[in-house]
Image (cartoon, rainbow, N blue to C red; front, side, top):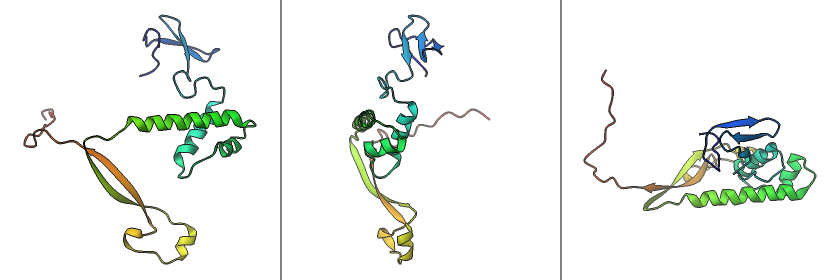
Length: 159
């Protein structure tokens, strides 16, 4: 864990306050906190990046770059548009890493949710179409057990 030098794989670094970067003790290579991340080569503040990440991932709907620009109070549209597109690109690549293989189980699930003020005044439906439940599709990868008759037991310390 921690910072590892890209040049020599050394894990010991100095923090250079005036440069806002780590310097490797062995080869003096420098790297900033943004190095190797989606924020590399960006002059936008960290706060912009983290607010944009939050808005893009924590809300059900999508946010346009113009809306994020408005919420951040940034004057220029272009850097915000580039930031949002970089984040969307990285999020898409992340999803490609996790593919399900083998036997896949698929089921729907229902989670309790709050209902809006307008729906509170209407009589509630019962059963699978209830307004208080949100339907979610769940997929899981199943792996067969090689020898189902044998169960591995973790060793317990003698008491």
